[in-house]
Length: 175
Image (cartoon, rainbow, N blue to C red; front, side):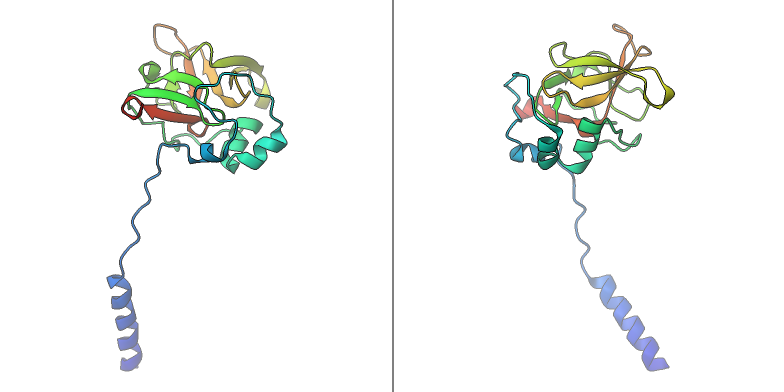
């Protein structure tokens, strides 16, 4: 019995000595864009790409949110509590959407902005789930980004409540 206990203790001590794998820090860079032939931060040409084609190109979470209007869980997005200076682009096509100077802490669980790039987004009435909301979509690729509400701060009074998955951030220092 003592032998068995000694072996168990030895195994436990060896396991404790093993190096822990470093925690992987997720980059703010959209690595999926490298495999996306439609992605461009300079081309504003309207895209006409089928959902079948997008499904082959996009990561599953990005596809679900951008093409099927899913929503990421509140307080889980990488840009929810993020305050770097720069620009936000569509993670699907690279279209410019927001400037960081319009971002504010709304405490709603998603990154929020009080103003969008007028050339970057368009709006559609959304009456899903028994609610009457205004959906925000990318003007270049028609991807779902989130919703806009009229309870935001001045000067616009709007709150663009966006999914972090739908966004890509590029800091001013990276340009």
